[in-house]
Image 1 (tube, rainbow, N blue to C red):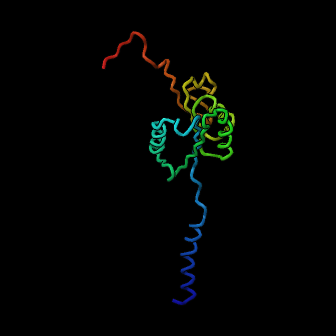
Image 2: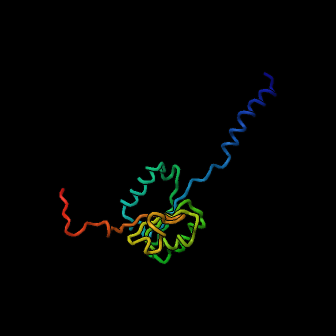
Length: 158
């Protein structure tokens, strides 16, 4: 094999690989998680359940998804600014808890998905249009179990 052919062969096989290695990889999706309180305020079971839920759908923090926590440090009046910052950051999804942060997130973006958790009626609070069709970019869970709770006078046996 001649020297020019050899250099051409090396160039044809190595250069594309080097260029491919330097091409910017797609950015890892980022979840913006707003917590009303300090780091120690979030019950550990919520964080564990959140990570387990992500894992069940194939996402692992640091491997194929990033999570950016924003804490109010006890100043709930900072929530709107934290949420707007996440919208400007163009995170893949915003996770919030409570009616006010959810309403702020809903007003701040119509395109970034919002996942909320609340203890109130999400329809009555104006968070969602209806339970079966919450909205274009918003969904969540409520811990409101009034109509679903045990009925007086009904006895269940174990």
